[in-house]
Amino acid sequence: MRLEVWSDVVCPWCYIGKRRLEQALEVWRAEGGEDVEVRWRPFQLDPGSSSDGRPLDEAMAEKFGGAEQAARMMAGVTATAAEVGLEYRLDRAVRANTFDAHRVLALAAGQGVQDAVQERLFRGYFVEGANLGDRATLTALAAEAGLPGVDLSGTGDVDALRAELAEGIAIGVRSVPTFVVGRRGVAGAQSAEVLLDLLRGARN
Image (cartoon, rainbow, N blue to C red; front, top):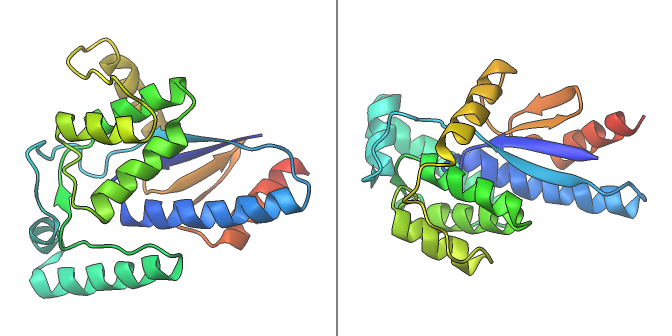
């Protein structure tokens, strides 16, 4: 069974969704469920953002009506992340363009290490304050996760990624994470039980 997760590496709910998916898969395996191949698919929350990076709190304040509102939203998602064992440090986070990060994840999929690279990029962004728009940073994080020798200087993979991003929009992905199995899908950082029901429904 193949489960596709449309996500962005700077989406706080996507990292939370990853943990909840892992909880669901643990139960699924205990029930004797078939092997599930998880494929991370690309989505950009802010495709027009710069690769240089800017403090997340500044970007959030600008987008959501001021520093106070942004602080409340960041505190809320940080508390939810803690419920699944994630220690967000959004005060360190740097909002940047994620196109190259998705290129790295596509390369990782081809080498069978996509989940590990996805995890490393999430942790780099939400915990360590890594600028995921910086190619040197992406290369280093990928190597730590088992994908050495990443070279983003070429452009041979760019059109394929653009097509994949367009595919997500075409099938109706408007928010992330979105979990899809076959013709069924759910959007948002759903509970482990909801994700488990999605898997069970695909089996029936």
